[in-house]
Length: 323
Image (cartoon, rainbow, N blue to C red):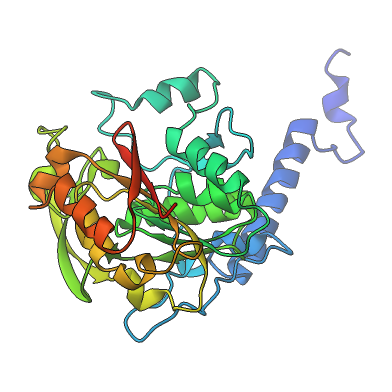
């Protein structure tokens, strides 16, 4: 009677563990779906007790802060902790290039499970701000890219204004705002900083967004084979955004050769007296400057006219003060 169990099965058959697990998983997925769709579509809203509202005291008639709360989340989000900085922070990569031809070096490190390399600007920013921790004032990051300077300052407790015209980079900055819980410290502007209000043609370099520039020649200096896309972006002078009553501790500028125009648009800020004028860091790459019809000599002469008489070279960056 080996098969008698088929005829005598009077009790209902119980669900198998696999079937039960399937139904439980399905129920959980349905619950999660309805929970999230009943909330805002913005991914940041699923985190409780996280204040990501951006300050609006810098709003002018010309430009308003970029709203990270309404920004679509970037995909995929690939992020890790920055290596060997005194005040650690997390950042999100912006552009991997065209795979699999030329994967970015950070992808290789990510696949090996290693932290991302320490960007020099992050360590530099933190070293300078270490001596200003007892001061109240802004850090201004012009040409933020994915926020390596912005977050280096924000995790130390400094308020930061960051300016970035590339939307893909803005998405990554907004990721970093969430990762580092600094929404109350970081105000983001979707704009290219210049010496006049209006629109400007900007050249986005596909596969190397960090080399995007106002000058098409400057954008492709190092990566001639990459596709370059021209688009119109808003331009704004710093003097239009930062009021005379607002203290600024540090101004960092990295805009691929457009530095002279940024500095000209910050004449009032830079003309402040010693002790109130910001510590200045700007990229001084002669090839990039010439591509934008300016020069290191022209910049130094302008800085001298507003009182910056002391500048030192750190690689391709110049550090200037009114000491």
